[in-house]
Image (cartoon, rainbow, N blue to C red; front, side):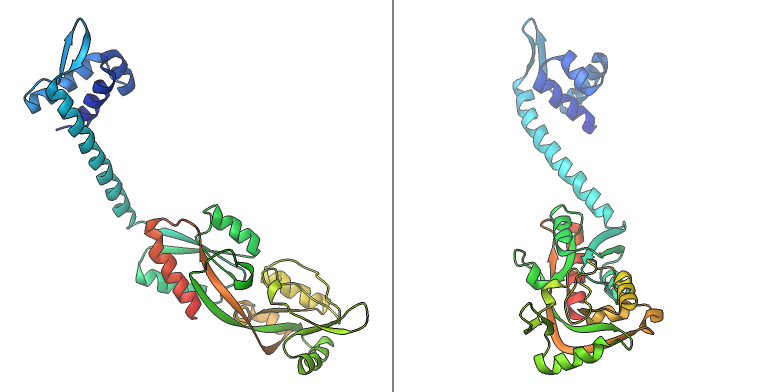
Length: 296
C-alpha cells in the first residue's frame, strides 16, 4: 500500500470535494481519482459515493478514515524515531560556556567522546555570567560553568570548589604589600576607605569579570574574561588579579616568565548549569561533561 494514497484519501475525506482536494495535494483530478480507486481495490470496498448531493463517505469509508488517521500518526512517529536514530551516527555539538578557560578541555572532550562517540564540545569562554545566562535561556548554550554566588536563581546540576590564586607582574612592588596584608587580614584584600581605615575586600563575587586591580586602592581597569587581555593588563600596568587556579594552566609559557603567582587558602564554589531544554540526544553528553569538569 502506497502511504501517499492514504494521505490523498484523508484529504478528500476532509474536503469531500475533488477539486479542493486536488489543489491541496498538488495533483490533477484524474490522478487523485486513480489514487482513490487504487486504494479501494486494495481494501476491497468503496470509500466514497458521488451523486447530485456531491461526494460522500460510505460507512466503510468513515471507519477507514478513523483508522487511516491513527495509522498515519503512528507512521509519523516512526519516521521521527528513524530520523532520530540516524542522527546518532552524526556528529553532535554540545555548546559549553565558561567564565574561565578550562585547561583540560581537550582531555574532557576526549573522555566525553569515548563514553558516547561523535560529539564535539564547542567551548565559549570570555562571557560574563549575565551573557551566559541569556544564551542558556535562548538555547544557544547547553551547559555553562559559573560562580555559584552569581547563579542563585538557577539550579546547578553539579557543584565543585576551586582554589583561588593571585597573579602579579613579576617583581611588582605590590607583592610585598599583598603578603603583608595577607598576614594581617587573612585571604581578603585590603584597601583604604575615605576615612583612612583599612578594609578587607572580597573579590570572589567579581570573578565573572576578573577585574584588574592596582595599588592599595581597588580600580576596575578591565571588565573581561579573556585571559590574554588580563595578562597583558597585568604586565603593562603592574596590576594584579584573582582567578581560579586552573586558569594558570591556560596561560602560555611565554607569559609565565613575566608573572608571579601567589597562592592563598581562598576558594570559590562553582556550579555547572544547564539550559532549560536540551535535545534528548545531547543529555548524556551534557551529563558526562558536567561530571568530568566537576571532578577534575
